[in-house]
Length: 162
Length: 167
Image (cartoon, rainbow over all chains, first blue to last red; front, side, top):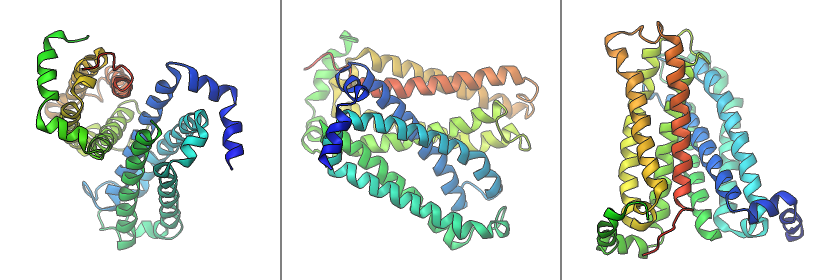
């Protein structure tokens, strides 16, 4: 594996990001903004699944409005994250909080897939004004916890890399 | 040095037991920073929803006051959380924030963002159709709000790189 990381680190972009004075902070700022918007929009859906702030707004409508933006910002976060990663690939890959961050991301994806595949199918029964079923509340609560962990592990990575 | 008049205060703060304790216990600062980022997520998500509604990106079937009622209380409470975690971060690393121009710029922009949010929210109390009748002005405010919040996030990250003064 370490061979791949070293090849990535020698890419022209990786060198530019590593050696430029402003490129890394600029990419990192976009990464933070993108993450804030990914997690912020996901929290809106998660809280709605928990019945907060109310059950007035239809779940179907909310997810249709919000999730396209979530995915767009996730793409931006992945792109900027990838650029930061290649600048010092071997160091990041060896950092434990960074490794666990990806476990967190995988769990978030799994939780979402299970929710979409099973729980969301019955959404018509609890779309508006009705308490969401336990499975939906659980998906919302798990998502909130996992994304919190992803943020903590991401911030922690910054301290390990130094 | 951005704020010479703050130097005595900064030095005093850095010498307080709270500040030295936060410096000694390695997990405190990353934890507070993580809480700060979570609060940023709430503010960013809420602002995005209201601004996109003003821009007409979605929610045409739902009133602008409904969006404001749904999201803006979260924004204000999260902003309070940002101030509290921000104060803790300053207490932990006083020179990092209080002696940089970027920090001053960030605080000025926070005031602008809060003012823009209030400008969007307050007219709705008297007139629910306020922004429905002033779509262009509403769109301008929404774009301004998105730009200023974005600039605040950039400034926040930039503080970490503008440590030009060491104690």
